[in-house]
Image 1: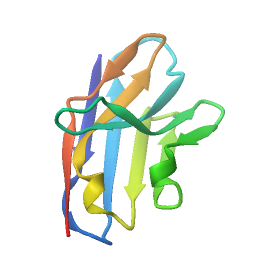
Image 2 (image 1 turned 90 degrees about the vertical axis):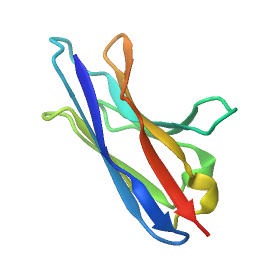
Image 3 (image 1 turned 180 degrees about the vertical axis):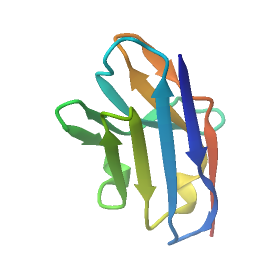
Image 4 (image 1 turned 120 degrees about the vertical axis):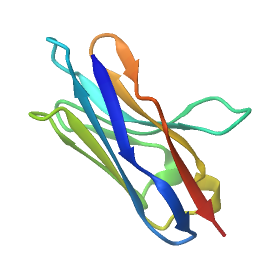
Length: 113
């Protein structure tokens, strides 16, 4: 079972970045996928998640700026991040609910002011 992220990097405030994640290797149906983020010294927090029915939850601090999308057939989830702010700087983790929760390795997003 693998959860592999790509994307991220460095952006200026007001700019955009995108993240992608693909999950593979499990015989079970994925119930939901999403993204969390974490900064040093703080708990990992939800950014956005989407379930099989297409229901989406966004954290309040990304509503209107970030867009999550998913391809159920390909077991992929994407996060388009627009209007980035320095406080969006964090390590972003792909989250997969296969009945059990799996995490990606994390990808750094840095937003400069």
